[in-house]
Image (cartoon, rainbow, N blue to C red; front, side):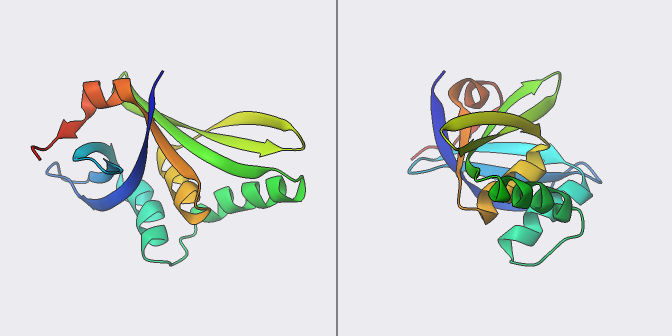
Length: 136
């Protein structure tokens, strides 16, 4: 499994009413991955990009605060899918010589990854199935 590091390029309204797209971009490439989410999930990510607090993100921050106390650090966020039309995310935490993965909503994982300057990774297969490559 080859992973590509991405950044959050933007969060924008989708053509379908009521949906939003979180656009991930491969670093140093013109490959993009749109992930369609509802408005509340989009707001969690948007709030991080513009440095404001959003109530739903408090749940994720509290979790990481507990992990910080235990000596764990958010190393990376991995996004994969779509599986049955949905994307999935995992947080990789490392601490005390151990590492462990925890499933998380995609928006929550991306917001935490951005906030904590963690690597955001996407499986190459995901780009083949749902990504867009613009001509360079």
